Length: 402
Image 1 (cartoon, rainbow, N blue to C red):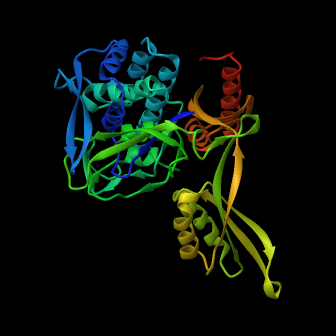
Image 2: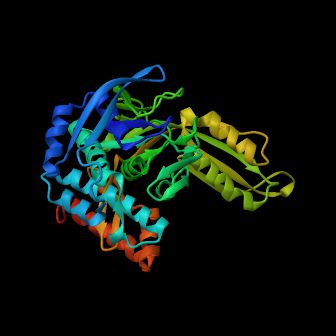
Image 3: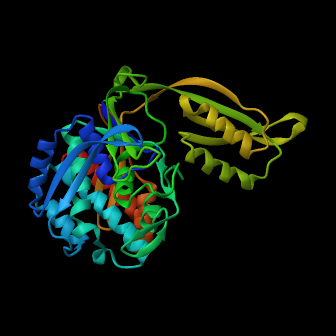
């Protein structure tokens, strides 16, 4: 399976994502050709090699001819995408990204979704960055996207709504539930456009998956700072490395299992420890009631994690709990090949995880997406989940949209 992993240590922006793909081999001419299918004029795109912090990368830029075009509302953006000749997959992706971005803006500014408008030079910048990234992924044969923890920056940023704290409110809403870090420098390091792309597309956010790297690309930001203003992308084959194809079409990889016994810690702390471990990239965290020495009741805290994160997660356990020791052992696991698709519901798009072994075995709507839609629309959570699950099954069986 061909995958892309975006290393966001120094931050991410939409233009940097396109630049990274071009740097990794995406044809700028093919990208221009595909972008014309949007039917939107009044802009030109270019890419050039630049140096950022002593490292070389590709800077992708969009030059808009009208210096002050009117902003476009979400409905106009989705009409442009729907009326284009882009592939069904790119259309679905793009609509999901913009709807997710629009919903975040709607919630933080307290305005109806249909009245949300995009400021970046009439939304042409964001439209080209989002659709350009999605076109690039399709042209390069990327089947699945992963990302590192998201670096947000610190300080303040000047926006169309005035001076706002970093991360900007819409960005903060978009990254809820995802592992983040402040990062190495001042300023906005994660833009709302990149946040919407990465949180909508990524099958996993955290440690790099086991993969055989074929190409590496660097997308350059506009500023040249001491810390290299670059977004790195790794492109390669997931199944050709540590995650090897096993019997029955399953994937096999290696994980580390961390365990510790605890009998002297407040139960209130356990939930906090869960949050910290997941934020640092744990794959799963669990507790089991156990009996300990001197007939004390206790819990076994277990963490399943990528091997590369064992030391960091063991440190979290020892720092945040009363434990003074952590056991570890390696384990092989077999997992279904998975992908994330975006499904339209009457209340908005929902990301759905699909696990496949031959035929589809598991369809699981993303809880956070369903929760947000249920709260926004005032409908029961189970209604949103059932609608998304049914729509996903219909699409997978060939009865719905491609």
